[in-house]
Image (cartoon, rainbow, N blue to C red; front, side, top):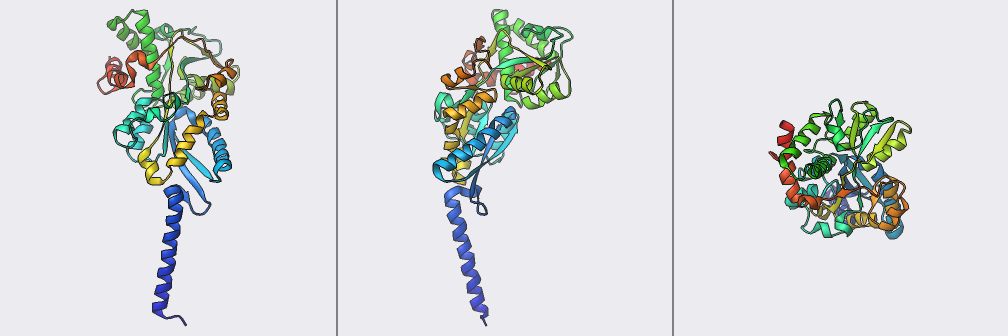
Length: 346
């Protein structure tokens, strides 16, 4: 019969073996490693409309990365308004990577010391593996004859667009409309603000994110026009044939969603290498085709050309540089007490 002391020593040895085993797995994959199935899990915190894109990309990446390295990976997705998602990371969401709607949302995380400075140069094209733009989605027949931004300020036109305080798409929407008004009124600030006030006075519903606005317009039947990501509009037209039409305004904006490793979290989780591979593979030719298939504009010009029939590549697009970059644009237009707040209160 085993003595009491022998039993204690046996239990202690087993406990030590378990600790060492956990440590071994942790050294390979951090706390995201699941000992039961050997998979390394990373979390991608992204913005609203990318759900379908990343569901497809994650499946492709997991298979590709396992073939390349022998490591099994599972990617956990999180989606919401881009600004809200950025704040969730700051407040503790365990993101290994972020793929957000605009660079300023990633800068917010950087300012908290969670992302290392210089993240924008870590990947090609300012860490923007795909782009998009802003278009109008109207119901079939376009009863209100909506063709351009000036039609959105007409009496009786109900607009659906998300809230710039929580949504990256909404910020792009606002800046595209502002640029149109700036051109129309030759930089006259009073006229531009009056135009923007008229536009937002016509907003019937302001959801927290772009996907919520799509649901409001498409499924709930509210509004005459949805100011939308191009990819959302393309997807909607494909899913509801004959029910909706895309209208390209005379002026829009080159929207550049950004990606970054959340260095603090990835370092703690031991997932830096996989996180870097996950974002880096977005630039591969096959991944760029997945991006194009889901209505985003590939950053690879050759692959973009393969999807020329899907996008209006002749659109007149301003860029964030026309607003002094995101640092200046955000503080001027979207920070508390900024231009958007003034216009919306008015």
